[in-house]
Length: 496
Ligand code: NAD
Image (cartoon, rainbow, N blue to C red; front, side, top):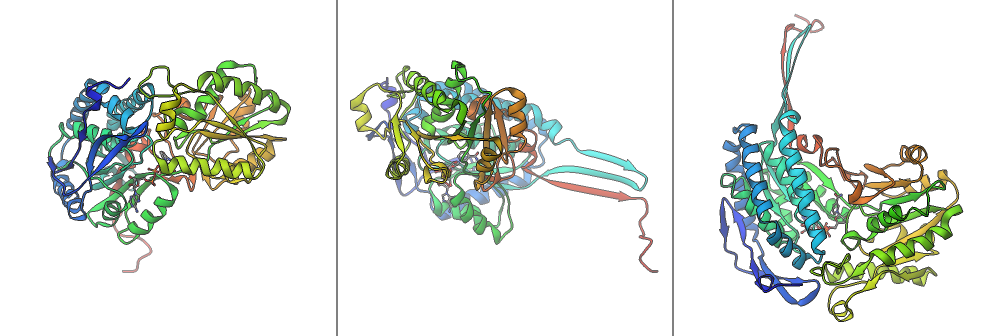
């Protein structure tokens, strides 16, 4: 339950050139479990302050890029230790401002630190200069820092999706201006400041706000790379904004990830049924890589639905994020709650059957917060909005399919292609997986449960451009620089 200390209001300010910078106006961040409670305040950074942050990062880059990789690793490791020491405090703040249960908030720190550690261990080899001598001389390939990175993160995993950018950008010799989402700005800002305390002034800067500040970050000529995670619609604005100065970009966007259950899947496997339920409803379904549409082979469909409901009713306990019994918290914000409600109501109007799942632990709390009871949607058409759009919340459609060719087509006709999963005997599942257009396909598991930070993560089609995680997620913060020393200096076909 919420403690006295938790009730203290947190105030964050913009962090520019190693200093907190006072702002003229502040916005309140409410607690989604109890929207009348203010968790803290965050500033509305002005465009001028955003410019100051970018100029501070550009100034710091001149010396930061000269530091050795070993020095950077040393600082990052100290920052990791400080985050670990402050984990409980961060987790409580994250739970209160976001609405995710404590275990889930700890999970976010776990994934963040796992990646930061991996990046420290991997950066030396990822950026290793290659020197090749060949019959026509010598070539040196180096991975040089790009410059000032604008890192723009979303609200669903505010810490993980900020550190996924901060760690590799800094380790590769860049400086950064981070803008967390106004729907979850506090814990991300605290973590960024903890990291910043180990680095020279100007290397990490944090600004707050929404599209206004975002536009400065994506148009300012000093910014040479944008690392964005968020919605596909926002990414389209960003691409247009950045086109004037041709910025490098990594875009991690929306998804409509399918889970495909083949005829060889064992519906009596209770652990697997639990895994799919978690893959649909962890973080109240608000994860880019959550399984958002489930296709089940018709031969096992009826039994699958029956076992799914049993498993969901066992695992889903909707309540106070601070109650250790809770597995599913409120939706993060009213806007998102209404998006999900709209899709479910639309499906119902089209004739779908909606089945509520799980147990509401505290009805009074449920009524006061942005809670939504998770639902299963049956009998919908393959092209209904609930199936083809990203719901990003606690509802999931389950549909039957007749043959693999059909389900592969349904999977691939989406505009998205972030992750997917195939469930059944391993050989069958891998054979279908090879035909899917998705950045990651997991076998017999899905979503965060199948995430491996050692390998590149990102999407096909409108799910994004580029990859985060893995060695590639470090090199994406560099420019390849080739130094050629040819033996034959004069080309034979150019006349004297
Ligand atoms: P969003 O696009 O609304 O906002 C993301 C960030 O962009 C926020 O910080 C926001 O303030 C900022 N922003 C808004 N307008 C901007 C503009 N014009 N210029 C620059 N920045 C601007 O997304 P959201 O609602 O915070 O997050 C949910 C979305 O993110 C979902 O679609 C989800 O699938 C996606 N997501 C993708 C991944 C991934 O790795 N692919 C991970 C998590 C979330």
